[in-house]
Length: 269
Ligand code: DGL
Image (cartoon, rainbow, N blue to C red; front, side, top):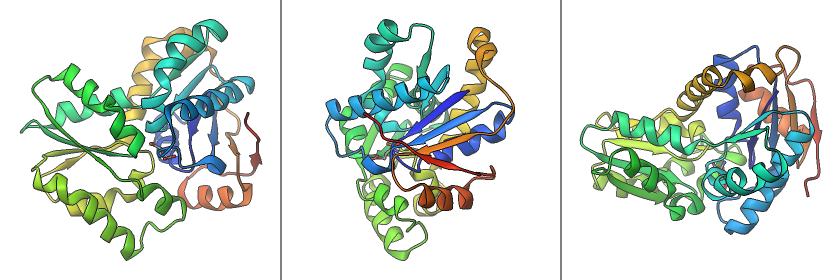
């Protein structure tokens, strides 16, 4: 099984792409909806919440966990990979989403002006800038924290005019910087992809995060047959949330093509 972790519903955008690209794999999704948003929390808290979630997914038998959440990927992944995994679970793997997104952004930009939007924690971490500059040191990177977007998506306000207004306000400064590529550095933003593309206009390519991450997972499994071989295939996917399972089921059913027959409530910690 592959575990997909997010602070809330956002990671369903990534899971949807996985289900399309690698439908035979069995997935376990865990959304920490009770403690979302992570994006305004400190590094220590984000690390601890993420570690608890990964441990829970390992306990269910996941060999590989994808931190779909950019905030967890920027604030917790390195410590998990470098300190915690080698000590506690040397044969399991945890991967994030930042490097695939940065590679996609760096590959697309012509003018070398790349915008990144994300939670406050993600933008302030500077991890996207670092990864983009590792690939192409000459790039101009402009980050913009958009802290109101995650709660709007979690509240299912995606199609409300208020959300478009807020998005326009956030994206204004990146348009002024004439970015020709935009990386939506948060799992919740693909829910707003059409609005983002409309606001940024034709002169700006908006990276499709879920597709990019799914492609990267396919590559990873090809390059790591030992992990690929240990992953269970077939059977139903499972869904876990730290908040109301009914609400999760309603949101998930509306968005995923997977038949979600049950969502279980869990307590992490
Ligand atoms: N899903 C998280 C991400 O990709 C953000 C949500 C949150 O702030 O909890 O960054």
